[in-house]
Amino acid sequence: MTERHDIQNREDIARLVQTFYTRAFADPVLGPIFIDVVQMDLAAHMPIMCDFWENILFGARKYPGGMMMVHFRVHTKTALEPHHFQHWLDYWVETVDELFNGERATIAKVHASRTAVAMANRFEELPGGPPVGVTPRSYFS
Picture (cartoon, rainbow, N blue to C red):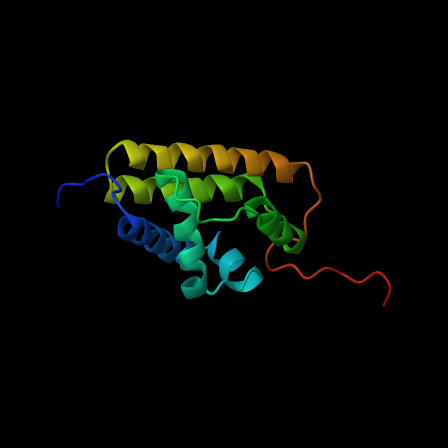
């Protein structure tokens, strides 16, 4: 194993984000949300996520915001519950720790933790859509 360095540039961010999403897409809990519910185009999503993390780690001011609203729209399609955010966070921290070590790596983990907690708390208060794989019944047919 090579020695881990801190996150130094956008290329490191892209490596982190790509590795994370590759794992998340394959996960039995998160994968169906990304693939079936969101139908995420990872190639199109990568630059957005890299912009987001460049803002957080380097103050780049590339990401325009709106993260909460994007996730709210997902929540209306399928209920995002605290265990989803914890699962997401576990993968994120594991991926950061595997690839990087240093101040920015720590910031990436701390920011992700704060974001996961904030979203889990917020969405727990709001009604969400049916669980993944459950088709809502029509009471009017």
